[in-house]
Image (cartoon, rainbow, N blue to C red; front, side):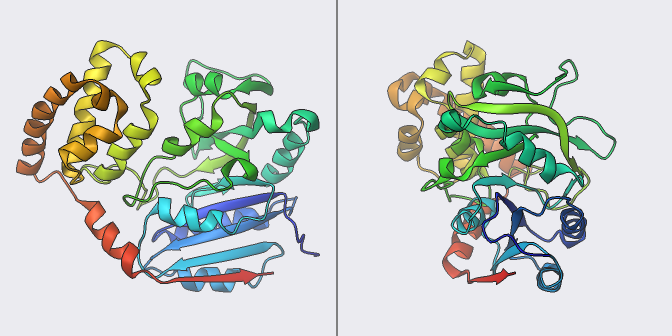
Length: 329
């Protein structure tokens, strides 16, 4: 089959020690009816068979693969930034290594993209589609919400009704020159996306694009221990602007500030630097009092050995990593 030199969609997949799940995603991509995409795979210092699998698989397929391999784990944010530099598609979509794409997913996404008005394209981010888990339970919509048909909506509307785990297909131009903050192995995508999506439109569809495997190990999420605390502190600082913070209830404000101080302390951010990066604390000195409450919580965390200072390993790995890049097809 003739390889499309200029793909419509760049699928981005960071992966860390999840080769058995990555194989399922890879197979689902080979089954796509439309091949107008490229697959950018980021190997985040995996110690399993990821490297061998990708190099063998990439030689057999009829679509373009860009393989970015880090010698050490550098985290999703840093790896995403490297992968973004190699995007050639007009649209970008992140796809977790534990996701499986339905055979008609790319075909349906392509048809939806064609519905974006050409003369209003800059007003749109792209597509927001539905994901389900292995038991066909929606991971995108809350139980009390049902989307019957595809419609055009603003991000502000979407953000109020979605559970969070949908498939976003966005114009690459929106992310041009933008970077995720590299302060820890993980920082929530909302730290960047909420600002970029503001007042822009999506084609919002109930069509199911991906099946998510919630049993996958090494998920970049928070477990029983407090990990990625520095990333959490910076994410709160990015998301909680003065305007958004002012809309919260009194008790939610207290919770946000206390959690921010807690993550800052565990993330080894000094008081003055932390105070400055979060606008509400920088503008209102009274919120500094909550630092004492957070300090007590942090002492309890340490007493129960609840904290893992992931940012220390992150800083070391960022300095000593070696990146190799291979282009296939």
